[in-house]
Image 1 (tube, helix red, strand yellow):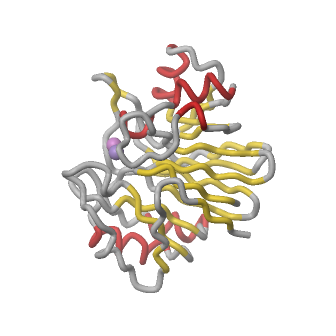
Image 2 (cartoon, helix red, strand yellow):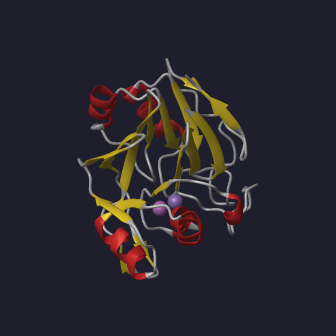
Length: 221
Ligand code: NI
Ligand code: MN
């Protein structure tokens, strides 16, 4: 699997001919180095309906003919907006794809878009090319993260550390220690002034921290 960080909470996960874009927020993202038109992907997966996660989904889905994997209400909204193919889910659900699978987990947050309820906020577990990647979405710490770690055994966990809207570094350290991935990637920080501006305080015990720069790619086998 090759992991490309798009800035904020966005990633491209690639293996062979498959690429899953997660939370592709590029337009209006001061850290983004990619433009929406440059994104080539076969699938899009969203954690929740907030604008800093839905981002350029509609543009990218249309340009690539990519199905969008999202919570039921968010997927329905995107269909109404002209996204041709969606895969609806909800926490606990797992969907099989030619590249592997995507599972929805809990996230403690909210989910709305332009005042409309967008269903449950979620985390996503993506299995691709023999690597399991857990994207926690926007969330507080919750003790069931232990179960996510035990059940899915993610090798990588992308965890929000920006505080105010999600966990800050202290809580995120505890999350990483519960999930026990090999590597934790800090996300949802630095993008805007109210968020924590550095990952310095994110040093979980027993888990390697891999800070990624927007635009950076990292290949794991
Ligand atoms: Ni959010
Ligand atoms: Mn957010």
